[in-house]
Image (tube, rainbow, N blue to C red; front, side):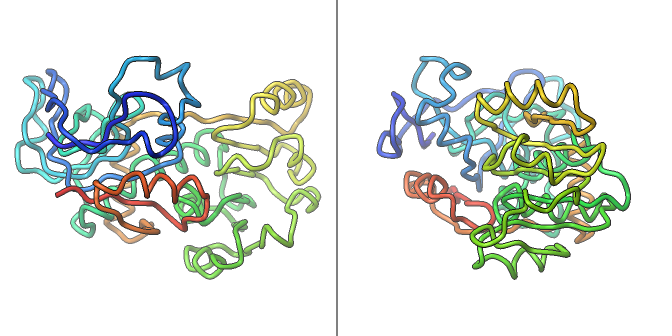
Length: 314
């Protein structure tokens, strides 16, 4: 099969497009003929070696965490999916999606809603699951809560704004650049702060939940903006912030949580229902062919994409 791969860690230039072995499904897996995938920040962090303690030194590696396509084959224990079904989801591990074929654990995969094409479906899994688990599970969002999303125009943030509303937030504030303010409002934000001019950490005791979807702030910097019993949730904090924040959080009513998204079929099913109903929708920043994945990585690393960066696979 054709795939994007790299044989050593480094900048976007290490990415290659060429032949790699087509995987075979294990008993609890489905083999998907990929029609679209995506680029998330975790993909270039894997590629540049930032996560090498998790990813190790075995090569080649195929990046990619989002898969949307058609079932090509199923493992012997799989009964819910059949060849020809339109499916989407996340591979186990930290990659494997940026290729013509990819494996999905059948329990964590879902049928693509009829309202979505393959490109839209590929924009969903990792970003939407991260936002859902951050707000519902770590943030323990309650009806009427005041919620702030830092990085509201990004791949995770655009889902977080919509999901905060779907989960019953009373007020949602989105933090983004001025060019993306109208987009964030269109997703349901009640307030939008321009991060170039407004510092949300100075809004004392305003928020029940602060979700830093881009890990640009810290618990210690944000703590004063939380109300009593407030919750700060982040996805990839700096190690120094983890240690200091965790210590302070133990002795405070304002708590800090870190999220590593779990690959759950029940969450994919819930997201699919909301997508089918139009409660949430994916936002695509730009689409690239698979052969231009290096350029897509560069765009993601620049941190200016509004929504998800999608890769199409022929």
